[in-house]
Length: 355
Ligand code: SF4
Image 1 (cartoon, protein in one colour):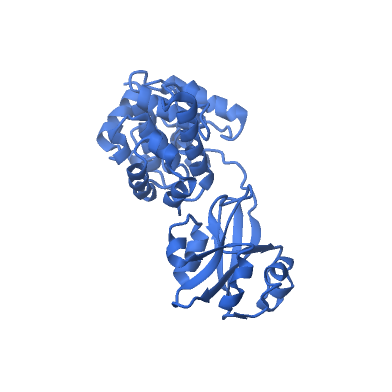
Image 2 (cartoon, helix red, strand yellow):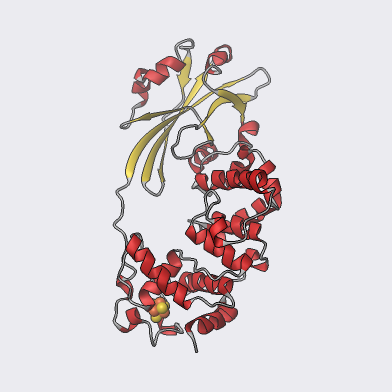
């Protein structure tokens, strides 16, 4: 039996039952593919329900404020995906009257959609025979055919693409692509693959030649950059006992763009509490309001991102209500109820849970 028929047979019996597989609606497939990039399926499930309930179609997503989209994305990380998805929905409404693309080539023109996502959408929603190559699929192919090309090189991509295009099922390309992903995620796993019970173990070259651990050939790891973030929870209580504090929206092309956070000073190294008064930003913020009390020691969190390690310290600074107005020159004043509704990073959430 041909490879794709065997794989599809395996998939019919063992494929994961996932909510987004009950539809071929290209909008749902698109949103799901973007949501699930760099995300575990079990973690993505909750986001899938929340997101598609809030934005069931491209028009509702385009009409939503970016803050609302980011808020629903909160905790998932890689926020540029949410910004691109939102912008793409707006582009589709404006430039295509809300009509979604219907082919691989057209999907490639959509903001935030790369070859993998375009292939997944066009094969699942439009039955176009284009192979979708994600990390799972690269791994399966590398092992089955003992391909020792690196997947992050142009040459490697071409080789994998040719092999996958040869194998894809012409009648059910969407099923084939999903079957490959499931097979990679549940059988031909990165660590401890289930070779003994694998349906391809009689012809898998990596298994037969004891090369399973060596394939796929990985790209060298990029060294993680350490950044020191000093956050300031500058707060006071107003006349009715409500606690107010200051927040800022990140604007630069950096991590967490458009998310809200506490006032931040980034330094090249660790800063001791007694030294924060020497920081130029601090001097500017506190120039008109020198009266404050630093409460306790700062909370420390180490937050790991793909290529960055954020060493964050949260200082709690109590100020006098009459000085609050000075800080509104730099920041937005909120209470916890209001901040709850604003999109923010997991790191900021960690601090909020702590206090
Ligand atoms: S035999 Fe092992 S390495 Fe080969 S395809 Fe099956 S699970 Fe993957």
